[in-house]
Image 1 (tube, rainbow, N blue to C red):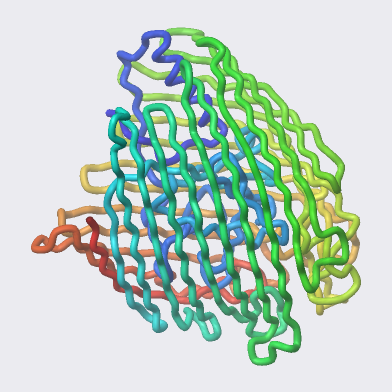
Image 2: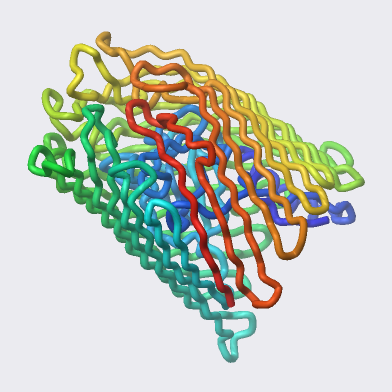
Amino acid sequence: MKRAPHFIIPAIMTSLSGYTLANEATELAEIEKITVSASPTANQLPVGTFDAPVSNLEYDPRVDLQSRNMAEAQADVTIRGGIFENTGFSVGSVTLFDPQSGHYFAEIPIAPQMLSSAKIFTGVDNAFYGMNSSVGTVAFGWTPIKAGGSASLGVGSNDFNLQSVNAAVAMPLEGLKDWQLGFQGEYSHSQSDGTIEYGDHDFSRASGRVQLSGPQSQTDIFYGSQQKFFGWPNMYTPFGVNETEDLDTELFLVNHQQNYAAYSSFEVSAYYRKNNDHYIYSRENPSAFEAFHETTVKSIGFSGRHAQSQSFALNYSAQFIEDSIESTTLENNFTSRNYYKLSVLPEYQTDIANNQLLTVRLGAAYDDTNRDDSEFSLLGDINWNIVNTDGSERTVYLSFAQASQVAGYTAIGGSDSGGLFRSNYNLERETTQNLELGLLLEQQTWQLNSALFYRQDENLTDWTYSFDSVFARAANPVDIDTSGVEFLATKHFDTLELISSYSYLHKSETYSAQDIDASFYALNFPDHRITLGAVWTPTDMLEFRIDNEWRKQHENALRSGDDSALFTHLTVKLTPTGVDNLFITLAADNLWGESFEEIPGTPGRGEQYTLSATYSW
């Protein structure tokens, strides 16, 4: 039974793929390797808007998404107890970056139909591939274009409406065997009054790409544009005002993937990104305070794997970023910066017994900017993989990795003595050290991922609050030790798939400043978190998908209401037998009406119900 994997322990992704290659090379192909097909969530589409790369990550056990309004409005994505600034988003071989703030890292105007499922890099893989993201990376790749498309219309509670169309064509090139030219385009729009008062939104996105693919290569040229307006009470401040954001994001990206020789490949990516942000403190009185920011980013990166022999390979990755900012509030320090990252990770594999492979990777990464100190980091892991005669598999790994990053312009470029957001000109480069032990088990119908980790963050930039200065939040460094454990299991039955997870986090923090009473981000994490999802298909006409998340959040003086919450996302899909290629969906999010504050002091999202119809071709 061979199935395409949708998730796997990040620290062993490269080694497992290397194992498959070595397995072929040593003629062990008679053993059929099992990879249980599983998504980390049951639902794939959001309820309150069109889908985006961050959609449904709030139910993904591998990350913790803290939203303002909803995930697709403003998503702070954290991994293993880090903060949103510690998480990067990559497409191909480049990290998509916003120098103003990590609040805008997820502003990615790419239709998810063009991207592979998200991989979550932590530990060695994040330290190797990630750029200015010291804890984790949400990684996407470009999918091959297939002819077809779909169109969707939706309505729902809170005056919600949705329109979306996606279409692609693929043409073989005459005279060139196995070469194809493809075109894909998408347009989506949604708006609503919001799940709570003053929580309205109006989003639109247009994106398209041209793709040239052959037997050993794929080249994509992409352009996307996205406009988003949304409001939310106490979005960033605790003063009972109705704040708004107006965002306009453009992205132009070129990507080339190339296979060569035996088990070797490389990828080159380059992009230009511009993000305009208009923030209004009070929609009833815009002149009270508003801010305009424009950031531009130019970047090029490459990564690859060169197999010198069946036993030895060299993994490499590099990226360069050049950014700049024009701002009405964040030009008190420098307004441009260049970033450099180079990673090298040699890999050695050897058979230690029948059907057993030992993989050792040991390398280093170098980070630097033209404004900050540089950092040299060690990274490496040991993986022991066993494939049994029945096709089941077991992998144990031990890894250590260091990563580093620098703070964004909101933390270092604003006023350090006045205003709503106090910068800190003395912030230094942040470093993270991660030690991890993991186990992966795969059987015919189930899979278990588990990990035990310990992480030390030094000079982590947090946003803090003091009861003696209630009109501002300030950027302050903190040293934090984080320990955690996580389990993620899937089980397949004939008509039912179950997905469950549990995670535990514990933190010990030391702030350099003394007048800190609460943390908005670094200490906003769940002590305990459980997810349970299911996909049930009782008939060809009917499908049920449900995701549940229960959490016990760490106590925070800024949070009103309970520290625990239960969220449910339910979807019922009906495929009429009399109409080909049409399905109707009923969906509900926050089914129990939880008012939990995902970000302390910011109201939580309300209930949303939608009805949509999709026709595909």
